[in-house]
Structures are given as C-alpha cells and as structure tokens.
Image 1 (cartoon, rainbow, N blue to C red):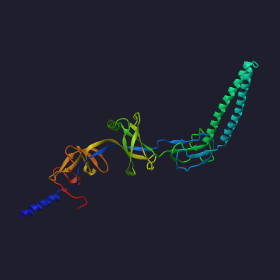
Image 2: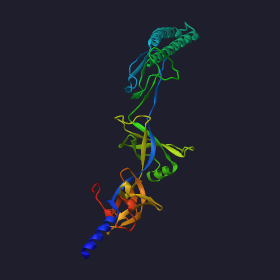
Image 3: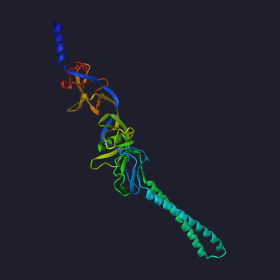
Image 4: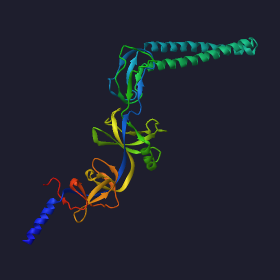
Length: 355
C-alpha cells in the first residue's frame, strides 16, 4: 500500500510539472550581418538622342526589347547629309586639279628663274598658290570626314547592351540635336548594382573589421523571394556622410544574367560584419526578454529549469546566435512552454507533435 501511495505522488508531481519542448544547443561559426534597405540600379543609364537633325524615318526595335551594343535603333533621313557628302567629294576633286596645276606652274617657273627670265616675287607667288591649293585639299578631306560622320549618325545605334525603354518620339517627327526630349533610354541588366546606405555607427563597426577599402561582402534578397540570395561585393563608398541623414552611401555589383533583379526594385541587404567563432545556436523561440535582457531556460541533469542570461550576436528567421559563459554545446534548452516555467522547478519534457 505504501508503494502504491508513493507511485501516486510521483504521477501527480509529473502531471503538475509544466510540459515543455526542448532541443540541444549547437555550436558553430556564424556570420554576423548588418541589415540595410537597398535599391537595384543600372550601372549606367544612357539617354538616346540623335546626333543629327532631320525627319525620323524608321525604328528597328520594339519598345522594351533587349538590345546589344551596336544594334541599329533608329534612322534619321540621310538624304540631305548624303548630298553634302557628295558635294564635298566633288569639291575635293576640283581642288586636287587646282593643286596639280599650281605644282606644275612652280616646276615650270623654277627653271626660268635660274636664267633670270622671271622676277623672284612672281615665282614666290606661284609657290604660295601651290601651298594654298594644298591646304584647300586638306580642308576638303576634313569636310568629307565630317560629312561622312553626319551620314553615319543618321543611323542611331545602341552604345551599350541592355533593355530599351518606351519611345518618346514616333516615326515621322522631326528630331533635333539640342532637343531635351530623348528618343528612349537604355539600362543594362547584367551586371547590375545595389546601392544602400548605412548609419555612421554601423559603418564604423564594419570599417573597423573589414577596413575602409570598400570591398565588403553582402547578400541581397527580394522581399517577395526571401530564400533567393544574391551574393555581391561592394566597390564604392562615398567620400562623406550625408549631413541630413547621418548615413553614408555604398554601392555593390553583382551578376544578373537571368535578369532576376530589376532596376528600381527595393531589396534587403545584409552586409558582412564579422564571423562569430564558436557561437551557440538555438531556435528563435528559445530566447526570451527579461528585465536583465535576453535569457534562455536550460534543463539541468536533474530535470529542473535554470535561467541563463545570454548575449545575442545575430538572429535570422531560422536561428539565433548567442554568447554566454555558462552554457555549452549539447546543453538542453527549452524552445516551447516557457510561459509556465520558473527557475528551479522540474519540467516535463515532451516530444513535439506527440500527445
């Protein structure tokens, strides 16, 4: 009968103990990141404007199409510029003939000059005429190159590879060189840049560890695709902090061959601060906040709960990295059921998803 009474008391004590779920504490080297909000930007933005004036004859691409460097986009009416080019070629032939006549005159009168049949001043005039004709030929050749450039400029080509925007000017309109309205805009997609800003305090934290050369590792994620991470390296740090916001601008570049990132999109940026050596890893639900800061409940060898104050190094959606001198890898930490737990009381450890 006494044995039966003792067994009943043990069952009542076990039933009175709070039911908790536990797991083992892990120890790993984890990266510590500093979070920021960034924006996707194209490395360059090219406003397409004509280099010659005239009627817009043709367009050879669709709005929003992907183009390669050197692709013909538009054509301006080349006929006026082709006529000018033909005129300069004719003028060159005319002036070459005059040059040839002037050179022959110099040769003829050079012989009679030696016999004093012509005044020196007249001979010098012939030499001057030949030099002027030579200069005119050079001038004509330069005019031909200019006219040829204008003919070439009638075809507007893509200076970079990228995605073309909508058209601001339709075929049939007259375009001008100094027109403030561009024909369209091209933005490259690969590689692509991420720009973001860091507050002064966080900037100095990273700078003290990573240095101020600016080659810092970072991760970028889209809010709609948090599991897809884009790894990049910064290449630019501004030369001063923004006095209005107390932040400094940084830029990083990464590959975007599949065009998963779009210029103008906002992204979450995690800049690598340092690697925490031997950090303790627990589930996010394990860490509670008390008057003395973050703490966890661990279960000792007697099955009783004990409070351990911890320092949070970094947190993610899957884990929290901690530091504490009183915990070790393999210790049992309570991850669920802490609401009924108090220091020093025995707990009833249950298996998750099992009644």
